[in-house]
Length: 319
Image (cartoon, rainbow, N blue to C red):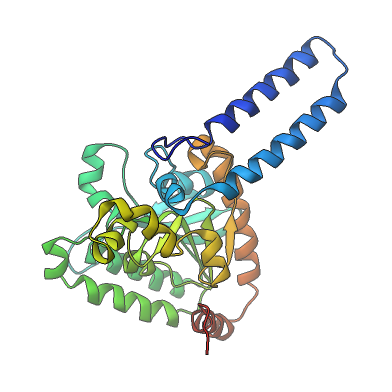
């Protein structure tokens, strides 16, 4: 595998896949009868792919979650939902562009989709505070959830944020209170809530949009109470300990599934979602449809009880 300094960890495996596909095309074009050999070759490649995915360190997964070409929630919304009617403003202060949402169609079903924004250039990053919502972003999200409840409409949240906005304006407008109210009110909602962590899931900034009946997570996303850099700075006062901090935090999808923090891992294309965004969106869409179908069969009281029980059962404890 490439060294820690190379972000494209899957490059050797991808090269192997491309060469195998080129060989398959060559055989088809020249009518070569090597089907059994090709079948064996692709089976071996699948084994290599599995070993590659299992070999990634927690810090490598964090870096994949932050990959500059990784599809953001806006992209997934565009590929998974149709007829998005975006709603704006929190009706108290303003409109935070780091959080978007509105009614949309998922097949023949109407849902309320709420998503975080980062951006793809410097102007967008600054406008969206690098994906860090301000208080009005959380209040807007809660307003949309309340509208969804009145409309008896399931809620889907798609989260990719390093955390809540840490600037002075957030403190002045009570960002802690805004997140806390979201946590409380999401437990009380009587409609299905499905949450997906597609990239970064940073602390309360992510949790303020992710109190759901089911929480899904892309295979190379991470979800943590603090960033590895922040943890290394607090515990070791040494930026070179970032990889150790990532391992200690148990922030990968595999670790979180064992601790019941999430309910399902959504697989990604080889190399990560950025290598094939269309395939990643198709896989995620299928997972969302499957989980929503199961949740929509439950009564309002059952949904609230399941949400409460889910969070009570989190973690691994020793007496």
